[in-house]
Length: 432
Image 1: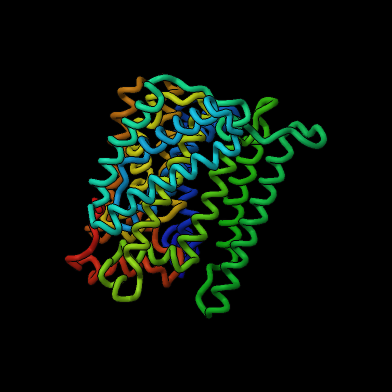
Image 2: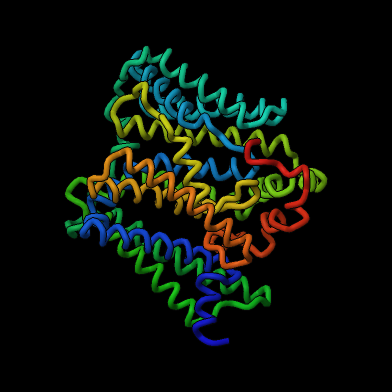
C-alpha cells in the first residue's frame, strides 16, 4: 500500500474511530477557513469565537438529546416549547417566591424530567407516534409559557445569569491569558494524546491492524494544533471574557453522552432499537424503557438549554424557543444521522450544530439579511443530506457516512445498516 493510499485510508476512510473523528474535525476546519477568508479574518478572532459558543451553546445541547431521539427512530418537535416553558417557570419561581438560583436550576431540571416522562409515557406505553405526541407538546407548552408569563418578560437574578452569560474567572498570575482556560486546554491536549495511545494499545491487544505510526503522528499534530489554537483564542479574549460557562457545560455533556452512547449497554440499546426494533426486542432489549428514557432525556436537556438561554438573555420572554427544534434537527442530520434511525454520533451532531452556527455567524458578519440566512441554511441542509444519499446510492464515497460509521467495529449501529435490517418492514421510522 502506498503512503498516499495509507494516509487516505487511515485519515478519512479507515476503520478506526480516530479516523472518523479526525475527518469530522477536518471538515469543520475547512468551513471555518472558508468563512475566515470571506469575512476578512473576523471569524477566528477571540471575540467572535467566544460569541459563537455563548450564542449557540443551547442549540448544541439540544442536538445531543435530539441525536439520541433520532437514532432511536423518533423525532421531537416540542423542544423549543419545553425550553420556553421551563424558562418561564424558573424565572417566575425565582421572582415571586424568592427561591435561590441553585434551587431554580434544580427546579428547571425537574420540570424537564416531568415533561419528558409525560411525553415518554405516551410514546413508549400508549404507542402514540412521537411526532404526534411532541407536536401536541409543542402547542401545549408554548401555550403554557404564555399563560404562566402572561406574555410578559420576566427577569432573572444576577447569580442565575452566570450559567448563560458568565465566563471562567481570572485567577493566578497575569499571563496575558485566562489561566483556567489555559489549564483546560492543557488537559485537552493530554486527553487527545492519551486517547490515541489507548486506541493503539487496544487494537494491538486485539491483534488488529493499527494505523502506521507516521499517520498517527500527523493526526496527533493536526488535532493538537487545533486544540492549542482554540485554547489561545478563548484564553486571549478581552479582560473579563474567556471560555463561557455554557461552553463548559456543553463540553461536559459531550464527553458524558459520547461515553454513554459508545461504551454502555444503554447506549447500545438505543442504536439497536433504531436499527431494527424487532430484532432488538427478540435480543432482550426493553423497547418501552429505551423509548421512555430517550424522550425523557430530551426534555431534560431542553430544560437545561432553556435556562441557559434565559440566563444569557437575563429574562424569560414569550418568544423564547421559537424554531429551536428545527435547528437541533438540522444539526443532527447534517452531522450524519440516518433519517430511518440507528445511525449517528454525538460528535457528528456537534459538528453539524457548529456548521449551522458558523453559517449564521459568517453571514451576519457579512451583513446578509435574516431572510437570506434562512434560505441559505435550508439549502445547505437539503444539499448536504441529498448529496450524501446520492453518493451512497451510487456506491461512491459518502462524506457523512464515512464520518459517522460506528465508533467500534462491533457497534450495534453497524447492524442497523445491514441489508437485512434495512429491509425489515417493522423498522421504526423517524416519525416515531
